[in-house]
Amino acid sequence: MIWELNNRDLGTYKASGHPIRFSKTPVEPGAGAPVLGENTETILQEIGYGDQDIARLKAAGIIK
Image (cartoon, rainbow, N blue to C red; front, side, top):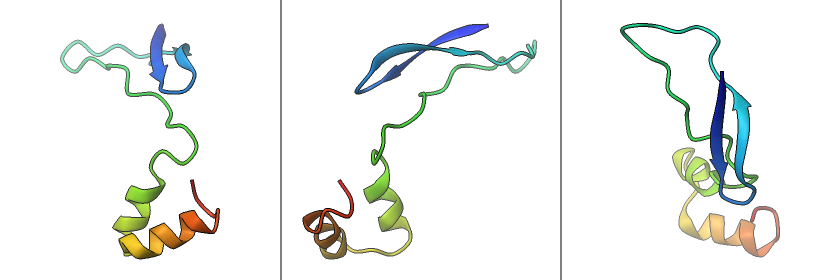
């Protein structure tokens, strides 16, 4: 019931596993929660921000 997950800043931590077990489709632990800002650039690119726009947001301290 307890899974060990990894966080790139915090290291290994424990989280509750999935309470239901399936015989044909077992539930596996995921990657764990992202750290703050880990996916910001990818998300901004997906919604249409260009590299220069993202660089401006970084320079302004709006994103990390």
